[in-house]
Length: 445
Ligand SMILES: [Zn+2]
Ligand SMILES: [Zn+2]
Image (cartoon, rainbow, N blue to C red):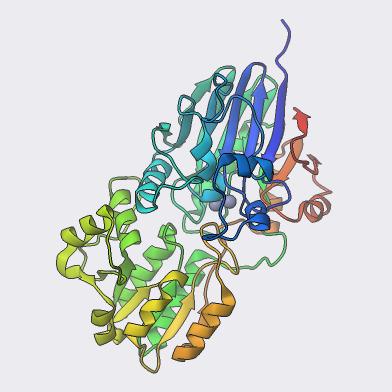
């Protein structure tokens, strides 16, 4: 019997943070591991909202959406892809599902499905984020999924969004491991440990690993960030304005506990409230109950409301506060506030002794870009000192090296990093061969 050919081709995530789109072929079986949007490539040509891509043709023309046959919904050819596996719900791993043919099944964690569907309700229809009619096939950790000649085992990992997975994929030529985005300094390091153990047991021939943090690394943890945030809230006499990613449930839980501890309420945005409602249907993990006495919901001033906003406002009545209400009880609040909510400060008028905490990555995270110059102008105008209390969603270099050494794959493919060469040198004493990944080149396994 002729043995299947197994190969990896990287259509995104090469020399960039995010945009992962990794094709795994095993004989006639083809699956994609993640199908994310590349922020880096997009930024080279576009500046939303006024200069935004209008069609998939523009995205392909500029190399932002790779040219692959038989996968896109705008391609009349029959589907030539067996499945797409999504590691987690961050846009740089999932957004370009928008373009995928609706008959191709999309495997992702139950939680990722909930988050993607909730986000699609919150956002207005968008060329680059549309998950309507996708054939989601949700999985839980440890489940084994057969697709053609492949057997794929998703295993949970810890990351800055709930429901993140790595994959152990049994091919005709041995196991291929994909880490997705992961870390061991988060709220649930045991999940990542379990993934690493299972990956090691599979004796992989190849591992595709994230390597985001090769520069600017730090020694910290989610617990450490919580205690630093707690110190800040304790010492603040006015309002605490907190900017953190609305899908970062671990950070939200930290702010919730801290607010409670210091006799304040945590006011989340309508968006975050909607997302929390959706996530409560997932019994897999704990999120704060919006009915809890510590929780409030902040509504921005807006002329018209979307359906989902009205739904939250009706459901939570008195718990929904506007900028005027907030201005009257500043010392009693931690207010979740993003860059796009700064205009609300005009009504809130933060008192002396208030402060602003940036609890997201700097200057970029997987959901937003922070415009520092303008942020500083706003904070300067209202006399708000800025604290930065954050820990990355990505594993640190020394820990990554230890994990990779332990897993012991024969070939190591770094993705999701701007420092591939540095990574290669840093890990050159490992037994496995480091492959300096190139875009759209086929690598035989
Ligand atoms: Zn990512
Ligand atoms: Zn991520």
